[in-house]
Image (cartoon, rainbow, N blue to C red; front, side, top):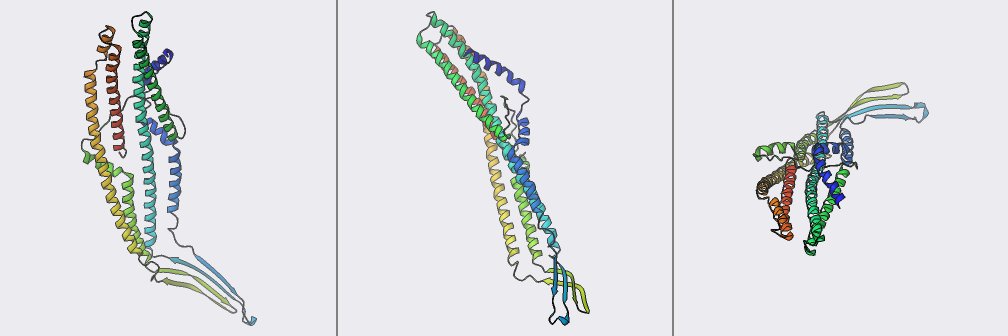
Length: 391
């Protein structure tokens, strides 16, 4: 047990040496190695190519006819024709614009998934900071508990204390050691989750101090920037513009199609050749197409309005929660600093003014407050991470 405690104490003092292993560095490395993002990137690239297909001229038509004459005296006939069909010219411009919008939406979808994965990783890192901080605290408590247990063992051996006090000191040491083992198990689980997001490559995250959390004072001004950077809202805005272009495309497709080409006809002693022109009159094929596109535009506008409201409400709630957590955390820090009586109860125990059970009880109350303060720090950092994910 002493050897284990010695190793823990050495590890606790080495933590500050690796402070450069910050959350941002972890996220940068993870973004390069995450297999989901790699697959999404390839999928988006393929989708962007697909969006550029089917927007050009239709394929030209080439026709060749060789007809045998009957009776044979009239000879044979050879026909050749080449035709090209054209939509109304503006249709090609709208198709190209729509494909550009879809490519931008594909990038926004990738950015949305990227932000989601990085937020997930950041929350895991915040849990790791909390776990490392708790581990450091428990390591110090375990060292102190070991000292108390050794002291009571020595007293028990010379008859200066009874078996109840001796057992109480040993149980306190046992409880702390098991609590530390549980924290280490949780830490290993978090590191495994982080490695999974990092393409299977392990990350040894040892930071144990929370970053300073900045909470915007003017929510409304801050929200404007968050709204502009939200890939979902950007996607919806693009969708409205895309639907508006689709209306114009459907309108253009409802106009006559043109056909031009070349035709040649040969018979015995005669040869006819020249250009051909044609027109397709749209009567039935695109009926209700424009009306359908307008209905989709109205639906997209309604969805955007709803999402903006939901986004605003959610961020407003997170902002209020962050303010409350910040006040609670500041209150914990101030009071814990003023009400820390651990040194006093230690002196009282050494002088025999209090029993061991009273000493352990006093310390457990203080330790519980420290743990709750660390939990408040973790909760605040998580809320701020969600609040700032679009900045």
